Image (cartoon, rainbow, N blue to C red):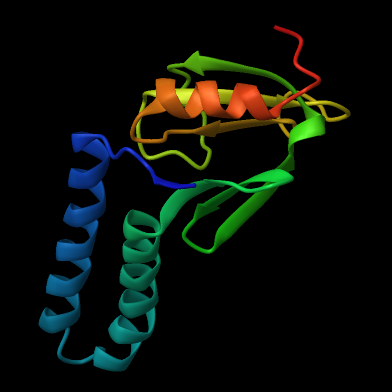
Length: 136
């Protein structure tokens, strides 16, 4: 089951504003066109990849998270707790409405992942049904 990330309005505005500013600046720099394209095009591509390529999949043995070029596989037996969250730490989420996933055997920063599926309550209940080692 693949679920797209919920995208908050302010996150979308920031991403699209940066894209428009980068594209505008690339067309205005006549003397340094090669440099502006060498920097601008990869940045625009990365932002578009993150915007359109952030999703989560409940696979047979693990939760697969993708945020553009970044991926994470979280095995269901390694998940020790899941809960609804509003934490804004950097993670694989494009919304403030998040699910916090903590893993066994990892510290707080490396063992905590935040995701923001579109229907987080339904996704959370499906995730909980697949996890056997929860400390709820």
